[in-house]
Length: 151
Image 1 (cartoon, rainbow, N blue to C red):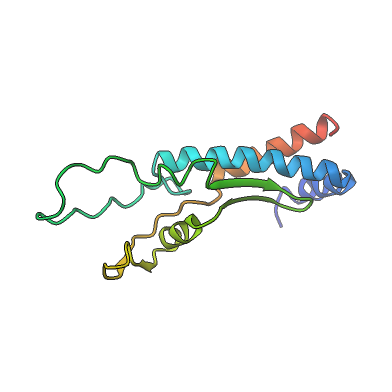
Image 2: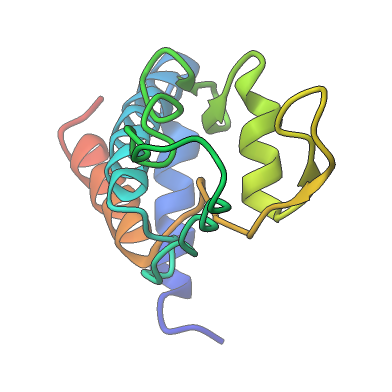
């Protein structure tokens, strides 16, 4: 049994005592802060456990010349594609629209076709979304702050 079991039970009781609107506000605030943390982690190109993403594959010698002009997932991590929402019982950070497919391929390391005329490519697993240890601490502290201030 965890040493924090009584604390968790008390916290669950306090959350249940909040009004539905209060829980929605709390979840929305947590979701916004989590999205910001996820965006920073993706910018640093690190997985939730702190390990770096696997590097891009080298381009063939006869491929288009020049450098790659953008960092990986630069547009994907913008607020336009990465949405945060809070509901009564959940805080959600997700990718929207057509970028969901791209995010899923990289999140799980699936095969995909980069363009309609190319062959399938096996992508390396690069976890875009996930909860790190720091995120868990942040969620707990945010919940305690909001509950103690009487949302």
